[in-house]
Length: 317
Image (cartoon, rainbow, N blue to C red; front, top):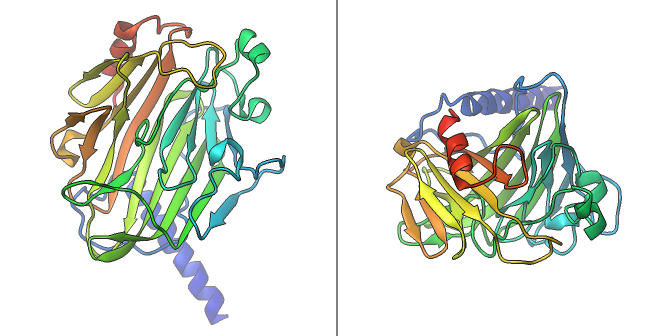
């Protein structure tokens, strides 16, 4: 009975922590060390009466959906469908790479709808001709669209090596989220755990990205947005964005796509644009949150870069 009571108390503590963090009540310079959960629950937020979100996490060559998958090597990139966990709403899909990168990749859609179950991230040429979306976005080795890593004061630190890495997906009443928990990361003379979560909401184009550091001391997170030589870029008062055609890879037809990250400037050091990425380094913290989005030129209202930027200016994170 004592063990069961402790378990209940621990779960209650974690739910309170997740609620406070998601509500933004813990500041960026919070010094208190959070508890060390395995995976953190999220309190649902009402966004739409109809749930137009979905999740996907499967072993390769399997059709059974898993709630979570773990690896002590931290690398299941070639062993799981679409290289990691994925979530979608009617406007876009996102995935984490299940390896040292833990990047956020984007699946762009031409028309609203859910496509992951049937397309598994890679629709056929025939499906794309019928108006399905495609894997237009190219991440390479970067954080992608709002992915999270660490910063040691001089350079980027991957969430790797690890003692264990766990992917988890969950569908709630009106939103879905995916999480990647990387445990045992060497960082500045310590060993820490980092949880990155991405939430999509029904009826809402924008997605929320959160990062939790389970460590004695605050850490510096690294996030940002990658771009390519042929894409246009802009850094606004509280956002970074790119627009254009990404290098051809698996999509049957190329199209111009937009991607962006909204952030709170007070939470970060000054923005730096280097090589192929906008780099955002956080001030010391245990928690970080940003918003990300994407669109393509074939969607109504997003014919060009100017239209995409107008949309970015109107959104209030």
